[in-house]
Structure formats: structure tokens, C-alpha cells
Image (cartoon, rainbow, N blue to C red; front, side):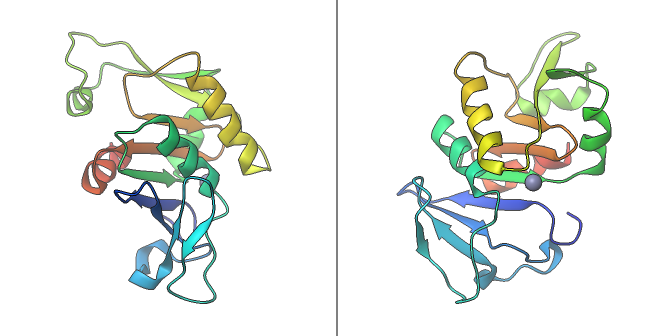
Length: 167
Ligand SMILES: [Zn+2]
């Protein structure tokens, strides 16, 4: 992750989650650089008094609401995702990648598409559109792309989310 861009979170058994505080360099994160937030958006724990939740917390909230199995959610502002998002409409068609097996897709010549959503200045609007999109469709891969913004992945553990975000 480059500079302070993007945000990482991990869910706790009570459905609250720790998320990177706003403006923290992702290559130098310390324990106090996270804030604990509830699914309702309320801040529950702030180890450092100057910390506030990431401005993009609403994306993590909607992911945890939609996917009960998700225990970690990584939102990465990757250059690759931004380039790819310029070439597609409402979904990104993946080639039959070998690494799809690692994402649970075991098919000969799989045809997998990642949902592609529009970017908005107000992040809450992105979250609303994620919720609306998943009310009518699903994806075989726990990931979505936001145009000219980045990729968001979720998984049943932080390590699995890390592996996914690097795929
Ligand atoms: Zn973002």
C-alpha cells in the first residue's frame, strides 16, 4: 500500500471491527493506529486521542453487514485496479487465471467477473451502491473494484484477505 492510501480492518466476535485510523502510513502501522468501530458506525475504542476512523469506514461496514463470514476487509488503492477499471463497464472480466483456484473457483476455463462500481466523492454513496448491487447479484470471488479508486477484498481471516489483495 502506498503512503497513507487505503485502509485495513479486522472484525471481532462482537461484530465491531478495528480499522486503520485516518492518515496513517500503511507501511509503518502500530497498534495505536487502529480505531474500533461498531457496525452502526459508532466509535467504540480509540487508543490514541488524535485518531479518528478512516474516511472510508462505511465501505468496511457494508462489507461486514453483507458478508457474515468476512473477518477481514482490505481496501487498497492499487494502480493496477485503477488502470483495469478504465477498460470495463459494470464488471471486470478476469481471464482464466490459475490463481482463481486459490479463491475457491475450481473450473476448467472459468469465467469470473468482479463487480465494478462507480467512484463518488462521498464515500457513503459508494457503500450504498455496494449494498444495492449485492441485493440483486453476487460474485464468486470476494472482491469488488471501484472505478479509478481501488479494489476491496474480504475473507475469513486477515491472512486470507492479504493473500487475496495481492492476487
Ligand atoms: Zn479508498
